[in-house]
Amino acid sequence: MNKTIEFINEKTNNFKPEIGIILGSGLGELADEYCNQSIPYTEIPNFLKSTIQGHKGRLVFVEIENKKIVMMQGRNHFYEGHSMNEITYPVKVLKGLGVKTLILTNAAGAVNESFQPADLMLITDHINNMGSNPLIGTNDEKLGERFPDMTEIYKKSLIKLAEKCANKLELAIQKGVYWANSGPSYETPAEIKMIRKLGGDAVGMSTVPEAIVANYCGINVLGISCITNAASSDTSGKLSHEEVIESANIAKAKFKSLILEIIKNL
Ligand code: HPA
Image (cartoon, rainbow, N blue to C red):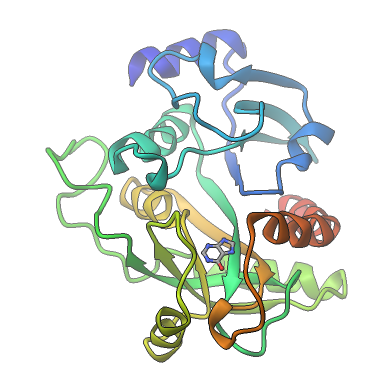
């Protein structure tokens, strides 16, 4: 861990970002627009594996509104075969770099029937159905407790702030519970019905491991899902990755303006 942090600090002249943003599927453009300096993951010692789809897996360092920000353009997923420990390693690195607030973003399917594709949803809580937990293993007491509290992973104050920002921009915004499956298969109709009954509003394959680790090591978390498709339950047609990316493309202007307004107000 120290080797990774020292490498990044040296490359960035001790940039010391306070805000971290992990950009989900189809939402990586923000980093292209605001890139001051970037480091490909492949250059960073002990960092993510190069299985990230598309060519961009990199850390991007930017200053917006006098705020120092590090963006992760691309993440590893549990379904790629990496361990929970591996996919959450970057969150611990962000903590070591000085990140106090982490904005986690993702593409997710709607489970709540009032949600539409291209809606944005503020994550109020999550349900971990991935079948594992990123904190399994020896605990590093320097980072956090063995049995960390998880009652407010997604900070209420950050949700309020994000809602205010959305109102100011006149963006409709949803709120709800993010349900995480391991993937990579999408859900069956029966699974979607179950998730709805058990309290999920949106479903995806990421974010939850990172949110658990961030909360564990004392980082404030805001989660934003970009709803890319109606739940596949109601035989409304088959779901493809292309459809997911297409909806993320439609939502990305909204997403970008919301993130920038949140940064302004953090
Ligand atoms: N299910 C799981 N993950 C997803 C979906 C979905 O419907 N859409 C985007 N990511």
